[in-house]
Amino acid sequence: MVQSARDNRLETRSARLRLASGRRYFKAVGEGLTLVYRRTSDGFGTWSAKIGLADGKYLMRALGSADDYQEANAADVLTFWEAQERARQLADQAKVDIGVVLRPRTVKDAAEAYMSWFRDHRKSVSSTEHVVRTHILPHLGEKRLNELSTAHIREWQGQIATASSSAALFLTVNSAIPFRTDD
Image 1 (cartoon, helix red, strand yellow):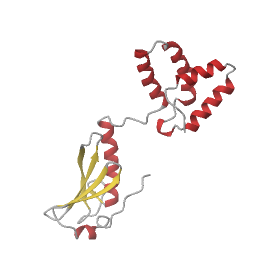
Image 2 (cartoon, rainbow, N blue to C red):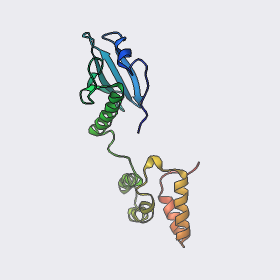
Image 3 (cartoon, rainbow, N blue to C red):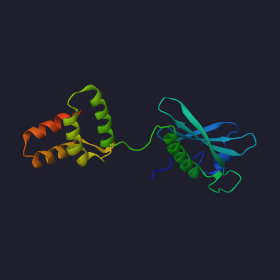
């Protein structure tokens, strides 16, 4: 679970009631995600989420009322902590809806994208597909790209080298990898 951000101005209703009306107060609660509190001219507070997008633009979404004068109900009246959690949920959903994040990318996803490019630009498609299908995907296919390290690749190469009696196979597999494993 993500650690909640702290802000003495926004955490308690008594602190929020001392803030100026009509002004927005911002608190970063994640990468590209800001929680926004605003006291209206009527004196009650509202929570919004400002969600940063990859192209430099952002989405602003209302989360609900602050618990300045009402008890929080976790539905439409939110505490500071509930507003943070709702903002994170909304940001995750917004990124999925606009296609920014569908799911974590795996080696299998990268191999499919690479093979798509390879089919259009190279000639040794069948042998490369065979190497990817039989030697790369069974060992690394479900590994998330953001978790893949040089150590994982070296371990995989070692498994192939010991399992294979053919040095040619080892060289073929290593040539099919379109990235370096230098530290």
